[in-house]
Image 1 (cartoon, rainbow, N blue to C red):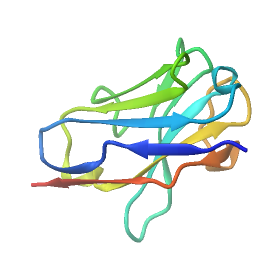
Image 2: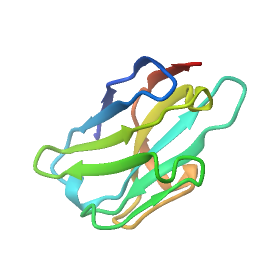
Image 3: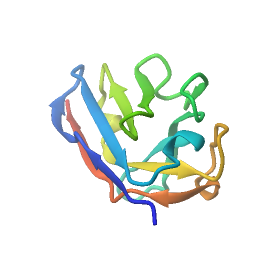
Length: 124
């Protein structure tokens, strides 16, 4: 059984930064793509960023491109989301998830394990 535990969320002002972490259990972390999603109240869960198994290939939603960066440390079974220049519209619960295989995934239904989520609130 794979467990994903996010941390690093909080309340910040617009323009500030946060770094989210997601620690994964299991010995095969390095063979799977990892992704970050977010869900704001009353909205569907949306794709934010994805990394392939090695971290050598990444993909971002247009809304966060240039501001957010996904990275991973396979030795520590951890994936990160560095969020800079935060905006009030970035306010949401952020989830990390493990992809079905090693290549970048975009769809919610392409991920099989999910963390419990961490709240990010950006005030104006």
